Amino acid sequence: MKKVLLVAGAALLTSGLANAATIVNGGTVHFAGEFVNAACAVSSDTANQTVQLGQHRTANITAAGQYTPNVPFSIKLVDCDTAVSKTAQFAFTGPQDATDSTLLKIHSGPSNNAVSATGVGVEIADYNGKILTPDGTVFSAPKALIDGNNTIDFVARYKSTAEKATAGQAYADANFVISYE
Image 1 (cartoon, helix red, strand yellow):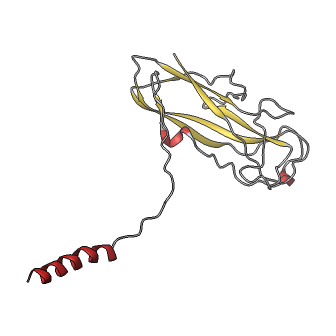
Image 2: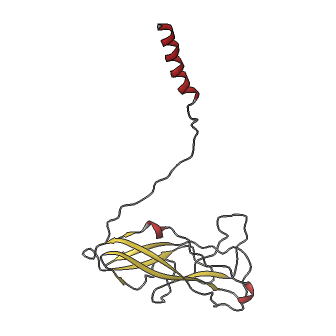
C-alpha cells in the first residue's frame, strides 16, 4: 500500500512538470515621468505628440512665403493651481531653417534612407496668431489659467522658403518650455 501511495504521489508531482508553461523573454517596459515644481503639469497625452501636417503638392509652391493650411494642435496642462501662478506662456526650440530662422528645419524623419523635402519649413503660431520662432526666446501670449485642467491651442503649417519645393519627407521636431507667472 505504501508503494502504491509513493508511486501515486510521484506521478502527481511529475504531472505538474509535464504541463508547466514555457517562459520566454518578452521585452522591456520603460517607465518615464517627471516631478515639477510648477503651477501645472503637462498631460502625458500631449507631452510627446505628432502633429500630422498632411501631404501637399510641390506644384502649389510657386514663391517664397507661401503657406499650407493651418493645422491645430494643443498642449494640455493638468492639476493647475492658480494660487501658484495665474498665466502660462510657451516657447519652442528646435533646429532652425537656414533660410528663414522663424521656421523649424525639415528633415527626412525616422527613415535615414528617405529623401528630405527642400524649400519649406514648419511655422508654429500661438492661439493669437503670434509666430513662435523656434529659438526659445519668443514666448506665446500669456494664457490665463484656471484651477484644474487647461488646454492651450497652437497651429502649425509649412511655409515655403524658395520659389519651388522639392518632393520628400517633411518632418520637424521642436521641444517646448513653459513660463508660469
